[in-house]
Amino acid sequence: MIELDGAQGEGGGQVLRSALTLAMITGTPFRIERIRAGRKKPGLLRQHLTAIEAAAAISHARVEGAAPGSQTLTFAPQTIRGGDYRFAIGTAGSCTLVLQTVLPALWFADAPSTLTVSGGTQNPAAPPADFLIRAWLPLMRRMGATAEIELLRHGFYPAGGGEVRASVAPSQLAPLELDTRGDFHTMRAEAIVAAVPSNVARRELEVVARAFSGVDTQIRDLPQREGPGNALLIEVAHQQVTEMFTGFGARGVSAETVANRVVQSMRGYLASGAAVGEHLADQLALPLALAGSGRFTTCTQSSHLATNLAVIERFLPVRSRVDAVADGWSVSIEARE
Image (cartoon, rainbow, N blue to C red):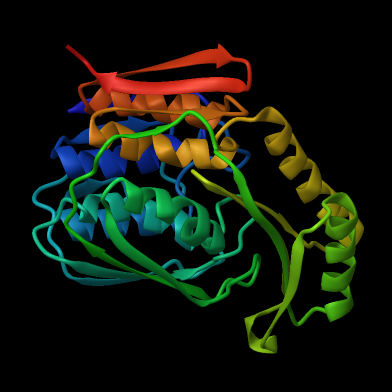
């Protein structure tokens, strides 16, 4: 039984999510206390409970402490089974965080699987579904993972109502090295509106077009029933990696302010020369550890990344290093001797 402190590092849900994934794959039980102690409202929320429910169903785990607001959980997995799974968060809690918790485990299942999660797909506190599909998933496929992710319906915070579906087959992951992003290919920006005036999208894209010459722009006007909501996505494709930066409209925040925030994030990434940004770095650590080794450069050493690496080392026979380099930080993972 591995004992974990949920207040470790950034003190959010990352410790729990990574522990669930790694426990399922390694068959190692764990107990975690002080769950999300660093948050304004500590303890388990609906999206965390759904992730636990999904992990328990997939690995036939014994679970104690899975209740709203609980700060202690015991999770003891058994065998991972493939199948057709469906889970509903019931709020605008992030579908993608639930998906990322259980999808890697299904690469180690005994048969192919489908996984459908409903809830929030466009949540400011989590990677949007578009990010998983267009930035994260191509790298997983390069590592040998067999998976498809489809955004069936958008769900904006705070209403939710979105749905994501993944198709997964058992896979063997290979190491990945991303020291550079390679030659520039394309940049495009997409403004999404649902039950929000299309003028908001046009204003956002005007800001982006002034900031980056040659950027392709597009408005995606969704049906009213999928709103209200607004998101701005800027995607840049290089030879080795595609990155995406996202901003979300909110009451009292102008379209120009939303766009300028995303533009500044993209500019910081491009100026660094690093292969991946802050959020993609967080989500690469665990797959690389499952592959046994890997390396990437990132423009930011986030608390999420540090927390993730520390939890990984509790479950897997790997060690990690984070070194300062000219373009930011180099993160390496290798097998322990």
